[in-house]
Amino acid sequence: MMLTKPVAATTLAHEFCNLLAAHLGAVVVNVDYRLAPEHRLPAAYDDGVEALYWIRSTDDPWLTNFADYSKCYLMGTSAGANLAYHAGLRVSQQVSDLKPLKIKGLILHCLFFGGVGRTESEIRLATVGTNLTLSMCDTMWDLALPVGASRDHEYCNPMMGWSLDGMGRFKDVGWRVMVTGRYGDLLIDRQMGFAKALESKGVTCKCFYADGDHGMEYFDEPKAKELFEEISSFMSSVNLLTHIEMLTVNDTERVAISDK
Image (cartoon, rainbow, N blue to C red; front, side, top):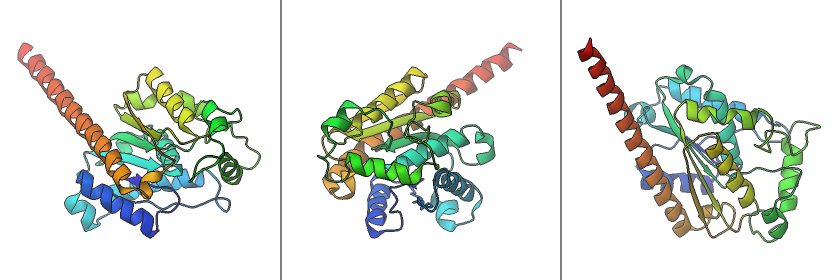
């Protein structure tokens, strides 16, 4: 499932997802969601979770005939990555309810996070980015967060509240996480700090960082293909590890039966 920036219904997002699907050999479900300020958070998270339950139960032939429900990933870019993370936190508490969907991991690109305190990259790159500036971030958070909430709300700052406490759940359910970003993105410090926090909770995390600006893959096909190569490698490794783990469990069960 692909959760893009808030442009899911645009030609730009459609072409990006077409390229992604072709490169990965995957079925991509591009999810639109309600936008702030008319619908403040957590409305978008509700929509992300609802989309998963729709995928689980729909009889859409594109999914029932071509999608492998045993190998699902939540992916997003920018605000979509924030949404994918928070939707993932929610459904990690109820994975059995999603059957036959089996989520293998999260792919979080150019995560849109924030906080009251400024990071070094936010200060250094505050006005440099072509796609995102610090004042734009602040304005968007003012519009999106619950009324009266600061940027240290857990929807914005993953190092706060139940977000920090809950991310270890990904380890418990066996999900792997990929965090990717661009060194020219003013949010890069937050993205890298988030990846370290995941690792501190025991979550298997693959990171990929490269030169460039926030979300530039939407406008630069060579950069998009570079990113897709990394994502493909991540998914292949996760699928292989899952297969090995299943074989190990089956071997253990056979040994236990023979011992009896």
